[in-house]
Amino acid sequence: MQLGWICLAIVSLGILVFGVVEVLVPIGGDAPLYRANGLASIGLGLFGGLIVLIPYRRLERWAWCALWFYPVFWAAHLLGNLPPGTDHIHQVVFIAFSLIGLVAPLGAFFPARQSPYAP
Image (cartoon, rainbow, N blue to C red; front, side):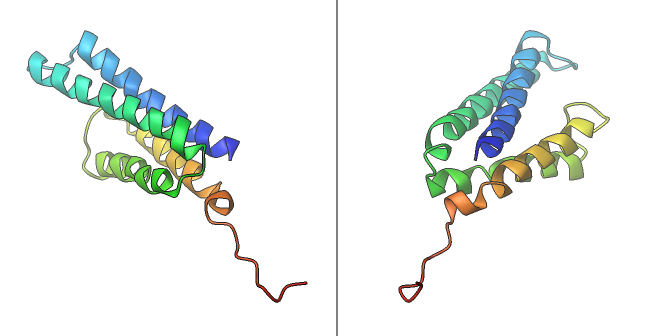
């Protein structure tokens, strides 16, 4: 469980930091658009981080389901060749962290049902 929330917290922090950098130092010709994107990223990082740190750690299944947004988000960035950056290594790393964070604690979120006939 600890590995899961730490991996997802890293993804949340990465999105938050990217947003802060984009707000402070917009890269590109349309600074207001980049700043708006940065603010949205800050919100996504904060919101995701709060979900990770509170309901996810309480093993609330809705939080586990909601956090599937992270690998989908990063896969869309990778497949769509979207920013940030052009090397895409960070996107692969964040996809991996997201999937580890969601798959590693599967047994905690979905424990095996005990048979009433088990000894």
